[in-house]
Length: 110
Length: 115
Image 1 (cartoon, each protein chain N blue to C red):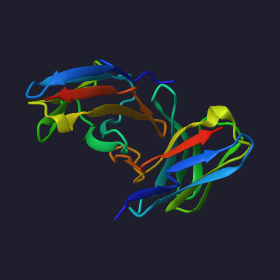
Image 2 (cartoon, each protein chain N blue to C red):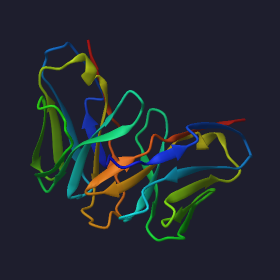
Image 3 (cartoon, rainbow over the protein chains, first blue to last red):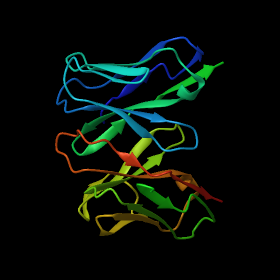
């Protein structure tokens, strides 16, 4: 069983504030690290696929970085908005399987 | 157009019954999956099929049997349902990619309640 851990489990953010949270994964046999956004009553949607050490990807106000040598990825939300409220999952693929973290639940309050 | 669709969205049934959940994807993907969202909200892989062939069977009870009539469909049949089978089941698909660069595309989930 691979350990894919996300922290914190949840966080509350005031609208307009920026925040970040982490995903840690095994640093050996790295292929890629995926980030998904999961809104309540919907299905997870892919945000980023990170493949190279030092990668930084951005989609609007959300960005992610990757450190494969130490086995972690950060997801950043700049100027949080209520529509950013969701659970953010990271997934580490290995041996044909995507091992998901438990997610970080983000609640943005106006 | 819905990319990955699964039916039904809700399924309420009694213990001991047999039920099926259907999944179809119109993305032309080669690989399809079934995930179970457990009580702690983890998404856990159950099965993976590539071009109709079983790739992964993740120590799921024999009562669960996936069927892939073609690469666009992966159905999940559950025999002799038990209370512990109550969960949300997600179907997903992805392009076959040994480098795992292709993201998963998920269906909207089926909430199964066994009474």
